[in-house]
Length: 338
Image 1 (cartoon, rainbow, N blue to C red):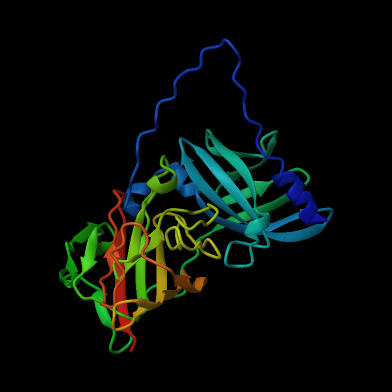
Image 2 (tube, helix red, strand yellow):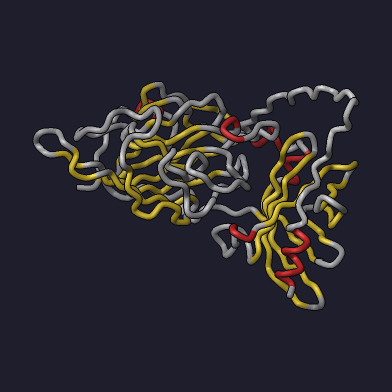
């Protein structure tokens, strides 16, 4: 079957190069940090043109199967290529059966390998697989179905246009080539109890960075519970990655899109409850949609996350965390619940 053949091809893994005893190894220089928040400054980077999402079909013995792939830039012309049976995450892709390939730029072509041999190439906005598994995957640009959602009547608009930065402590405008947006490292002046909120954010292009050093921020609910913001495109989807409640709950699906693509969080939050003596009687709960896909389903928040303020019966503000990486926020509005 094509699935078995594909798994065999993609599951081959990489062979680690061993060090030869007695031979001095050159010390590798740490790559220079790249942190770009403006699409106009990234468009001419050849690696930026290759990274992203791809969809298509592959075949063996005239049997076809749909696949999706996420190509993650790792700096200096190197890429991880994560291939999902049945499509991309949130669109039928099976993350549990995803397989990892590697790719490297050579002149004007990017060679894809299974660790032993070349199995295809990336050029002209397409991944072409050759050999036993054959097919073409074309580059796609997905957008959140809630992107640009308008605030309903009665909503508290925290940022929609120039001037709304005044709604935030430390609020400033970020003027980029494609507009004016809200900065980070800020707290809303208004405080909230139970609410539904819509937030749009854009991750920076940081190909030479990894892990918690790649597009790190966070949306704090009531300044107590951190919903992680991170460039975790192509990663596993852990509780310290995009869509995770930090240290508490990982997202059910990693819906992180590539860097410099606008993304959305739609959050339904119910605060913790306390009795007259100040004793907590119920934990806070939250449901989160990331780019229109439910990734947290009425999860219980047993306590504040790292850096969060102490729980209590009083409302709290939103905080957009500053973790040293350049992000942008926009279209932030809140509907208070009774």
